[in-house]
Every structure is written in structure tokens, then in C-alpha cells.
Length: 177
View 1 (spheres, rainbow, N blue to C red):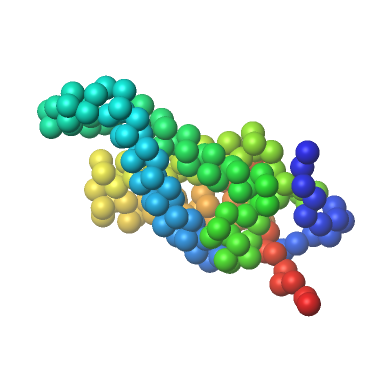
View 2: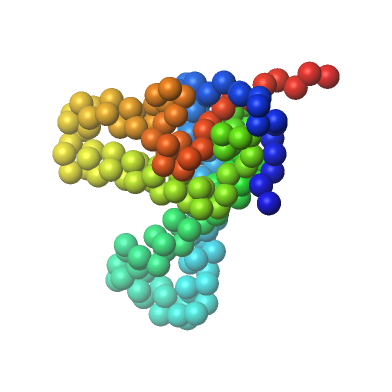
């Protein structure tokens, strides 16, 4: 059941690009820690299942490089991490710091499927930028960077991830005491 953050009639202002960017940076740092822990757990389970001696031989031979299982697990862990916060309270830790929230247009929390659409869209944009920098080169990446930023930049208050997930990122008002 979706959580109601405010009345449907109450419209909160859309979050600014600066606040979105700062929250992305903050959450990116937290994501690195989450990915490190998930990689450690994956390695421990892999070593236990395979046997530590065999696992060490595989690692030294380079057979564990580019493991698609690890890639899938890390992608899934990050989705669960972000979707949990987005569906529960509408805010990741970085979003809480910068007082912005993801919600539906009627002021309710987003669903897991909306969170999945938002996550996959953001991941696709990130990987396109990463691949462009790797294959095309850093100079060309600097030229295409404004186009990538435009995908996240809100137009009429909605970014591409907002449109595809049918949600909006709003500024949360300060609580009065």
C-alpha cells in the first residue's frame, strides 16, 4: 500500500538540478560502500562454494575477471538499496540531506515497478556516458556531456527518469516546530 506524504491537492515545487546533482554525488559515495560489502559477500560465498584453494587458483589465473554473476548481483543489490528507500520514505540518504523526495503526482510513494523503471533508466544513462568516455575519448565525452546532463535536467520539473517512471522529484519543505 502506497504511503501518502501529503494531500493530493498540495503541490510541492520540483527539485532543482543542483539539489538533484548533490544528492546523486552523496548517494554515489554510499553506493560505493554498499557495492564493496556486496562484493565481499559474493567473494566469500564463491570461495566457500568453490573451495578456497580452487578459488585462489581461479583468481590468480584471471578467471574471475569480468564475472557476469557478480555484475548481476551488484546491479540487483543497488536496485534493492535504492528501491527500498524510494518505496518506503521516498528518499535515499543523500536525498534526505538535500531535502528532496521522489513521489507520485498525487503525493504517494512510488511502487517497486516505478522504482525499477527509474533505476534502469538512470543506470542506462550512466553506462552510456561511461562507454562514451571509454570508446570515444575524454574530449568527445566533454562535448557530449551537456546532452547527458540534459537527460537528468528537469524540463518543466520532470527529468527523463521522472517521465519514464511516472513520478516526480520534489523539494521537501522544512518542518516547523
